[in-house]
Length: 574
Image (cartoon, rainbow, N blue to C red; front, side, top):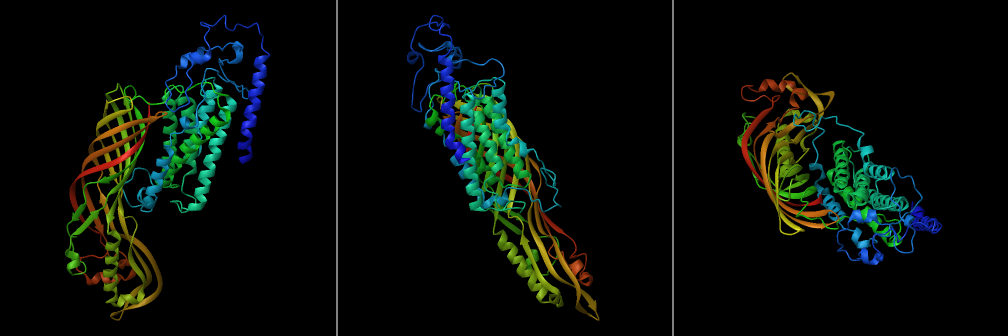
């Protein structure tokens, strides 16, 4: 791959020389300056600006350009119909060269960093696939699709398809090939270098090469190539299509249980950054050669185009406490059974996607998808305390002889919310590059469970002559020691934001969102779920009206939730 990359300048140069010879051999009697509307040197008609601040380019003017004095009219010819001129490195003399910094937006770096930041809490951002008993599901338990293996190539596939169909974009075939090969080469170096250094275990436990996601990085390379070739030169809808499919690829990688959300975010950042670096390098090497069109506008205009597609990340805060009443039984017969279940929450981590279409520069409609994970403080300490109580009770009885291991084990210590909202979006621009926004939304909130599993390993006990005796029947069982659920509910939301138009259709957004919902929380408690199999005779020692060790007890409370999310978003404006 490195040899191919190093040979790209020579290949492109050879193609240009060949093309130039063809131009010089053309019929000199062809119409040149006589057929032009004005005899003005090209330097006077096309501004040359090597800084990052480049004025908008009139694409229609490029399409009508015939050639400066001294060049044949056929030196630049727009293809009508399918374009199969794979080796013809046509150059439009009216197009100014791109600069290295003009191609770089650096937006891939913060997106990659966002994935790195939440890597420590990666397990909070998925549904508890191991708990098949839960009824709270966004997707079916056995979700699996192979579609993501193909959608990762959608961006580059659409780019090539448009080029074959004769839809002219930024680059000729040789230059497009050079930029694309370089993009994938840089991406592969980044992804594989990090994968096998970080050695992160995949969520399905298959291999230690999870972070970052190669499928997502590949998808965002293709999306960014499409964005540069057609989204910036033809229509931003190409960019939206490319980045939308790339985002869907990352989501499918998470739903397939092949990647954490942190892997997908970092993969997206690498894909964008790799493509921008590769295009910048090709700009340095080839300069104007092989360029057909310039960008319609370097900077998004929030006065005219406030519509956007965004990837966001933020910190959630709000309700900090949840107190459930004591469970309705007298279990161990001490004060432990009479205590309410009190939980404290930390600040949440939220990631999501959002899009809005504006009818004018002031009002539009849109939707938002968000996953928010809220940690429960001291959840592990709670499980440890339960373990001490369980083992203390077993030690005080004859049952201890059959016990190898008996303890609660924390499965998840985050309340994870999956939310979908839609509603009205508002925009108030202060200039072409600055605007404040607001929104009013309504939607649905789905909460995943928080679990503490009970684990018991030992040998079954039997009742003989008034005493328990150990048998040779091995027992290894697991049950829901505590399962905390929250009901699905409708929710209302609003938010305010400040948007800054960066460049190349990218914008940055700082936002503060507010959400309100009412939920019923229920804890299901089965502290002695192993007793029925371990020592059935024990059940006869309890009054079933007061306590049945084989039964699950519950405690519920209803709570009004007022939650805020402060964060930032990368937007593709259109």
